[in-house]
Length: 165
Image 1 (cartoon, rainbow, N blue to C red):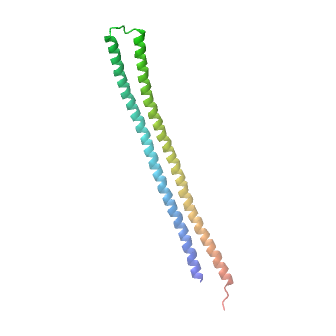
Image 2: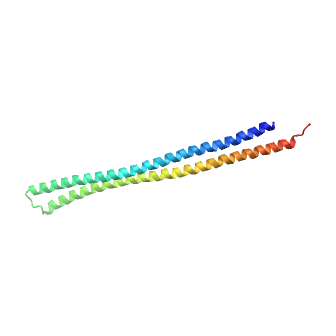
Image 3: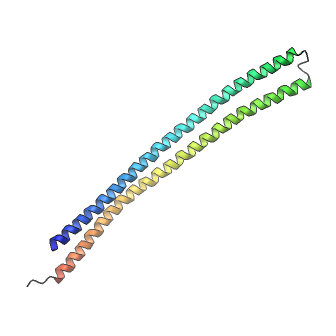
């Protein structure tokens, strides 16, 4: 009877320690997944930023080409290029093209910021999982200690009641 009680206590203590170790292992895995996701989000932010710059440069080249075509058409029309109407038309087109380029850059910056924020969230999740791993291990040890204390108390109680015949 005493052996069964001691064995049960020991098995319970070992089980608590293993349960804590398993939970800690799972939390460490989740922390690493979150760190990997943060790295991917950072890479995505850099890619979106670079792609935005490239798209803006391409838009700027198209705009310059279009503005050159406008200026050539105005010159070919036989009207004075210094005419206020032609200048207004040229400047209006230039402003539209500059706005298009600025919108491309702004959209890329917003997307990059979204990825950067996502990366920050993943890093926070990794920290949380690291703490969870540490706490799970501690909880396993505390559970094992509680099982040992409970078993020792039960054993002491049974020993005190045991009266040899």
